[in-house]
Length: 130
Image 1: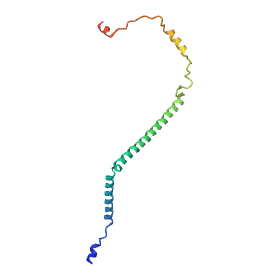
Image 2: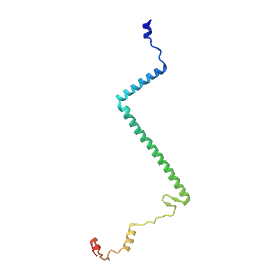
Image 3: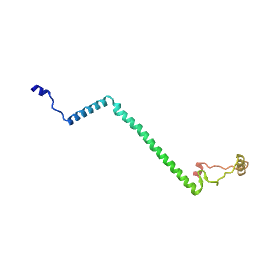
């Protein structure tokens, strides 16, 4: 009878069983990290980089959308108050049609290239010595 009693183990409590399985799982995770360092270090770093870039792009797009809506609202207010369009006052600016030939004639009237006089441009050394 004594040998049978020695072979029997006392009943284990639930807390000790849970602690043992937790210890076994953590040691297997440590081994897994040592065997595959990319999964432990590289994959989280790459995923952080990719998801960070996606998150930043969403934030920037949102701020651009808000700025566009704000700009449109400001233009609507200005148009209603001052009757302006994006190019200027409505029906106020009507450019006249000018041609290159007309501009050339106007410039030739202003400047006469046949009569001119020579003027000496002073050098830097001459102005200091005088």
